[in-house]
Amino acid sequence: MNQDLGKRVIFKHSLLFVLTFFTASLTGALFVGHTAGIPEDIVLFSGEGLRFYMGMVFWEGVLFASLLLGFLAVHEFGHYFAAVRHGIRTSLPYFIPFPISPIGTLGAVIRIRSQIHYTRHMFDLGASGPIAGFIAALIILLYGFATLPEPDFMQNFAGHERLNQYIEVHGTFPEDPLSDINTRDPDVMVLGNTMLFSILASFFDNVPPMWELYHYPFLFAGWLGLFFTALNLLPVGQLDGGHILYTLIGYKRHRIVARCFFLVVMVLAGLGAIPLIQTFLVGTNVPLTLTSWLIWALISLLLIARGFRMERTWTFVGWIFVLMADLLLLLIFDPSIFSGFTVWIFWALFIVFLVKIEHPPVLFEEPLTPGRKVLGWICMIVFLLCISPNPIYFL
Image 1 (cartoon, rainbow, N blue to C red):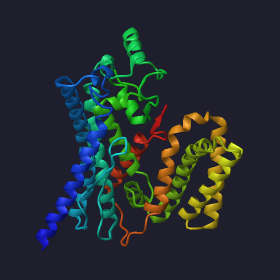
Image 2 (image 1 turned 120 degrees about the vertical axis):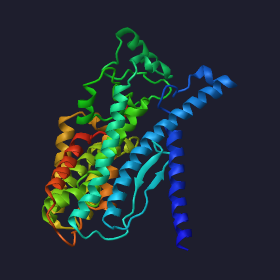
Image 3 (image 1 turned 135 degrees about the vertical axis):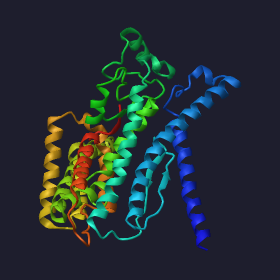
């Protein structure tokens, strides 16, 4: 019976991995590699040439999926082996296929099936995944930087005529996207720069701009690895960063830090939500600016009250802070620069309804060893180096 159960569990996890690998390969084939973006003249023909071309596209999608899922596996098995070491019951990684996502997956998770009683066990479980995943992402990224082709590599992509003309004249990429950089799709996907990516890129030549990075499988997968690592290191609730910071500073201090950080997330969410709400209201007879602010004020109040469990002081002060910060930033800066901040709306909802803001207390508090403290603060530094307030947006 147990043997049959074990086979069913392995089959379920293996099936999810295969499905995720397929969806990541399929979506990855649409935009990465030498042959992504099939020229229109080739589409008009059939036969061996077209089959060969489509085969190349597929295999480059497989390369991207292998890199991305390799990173995810390293991250999640870092957690898994740490749990096994401390006798904590846990599941194998669940890979999540999501074919309508730009990368074909929502990532991977493991399920902890027993309570964690000790601070050191909590730290090891929380830190092992980000550390392992960060190393894997860094290796992928460095290999991508070390093997960069010349800028004329972009000639392999359809719909980049003006870009290729610029490269032929200047031998490098332009500083800003060209207006018809992709004639098939007017929306250009831009990846947010980070401190670590900028530092690494400064040591290499021919680094593509952030709006063309997704055409480079190793760079794109490496960037995604750093981005997912940073998201997992958000210092709230049951996320890896929440585990780590809780064990470093204790329950009371972490409660304050986590709440303050959540308010920052709400400010970022507001910068994306207010222009988005105005877009939805276009064509109606309501005053756009006033109505969008009123809607965001109501939504933010509900989320903050839910997140702070209706504590009046934290809710009221936090709500006022969020609205005032959003107002100040939108007055100072051009609202268009916040177009990619809509992702923080999702993360605000994710924190409030799933991972929560505060970390539940551990049964047995104990000081971390000096080595664990060093690793813990390194993880917090990695978070700052890899996070981007404007991670993915379209021009």
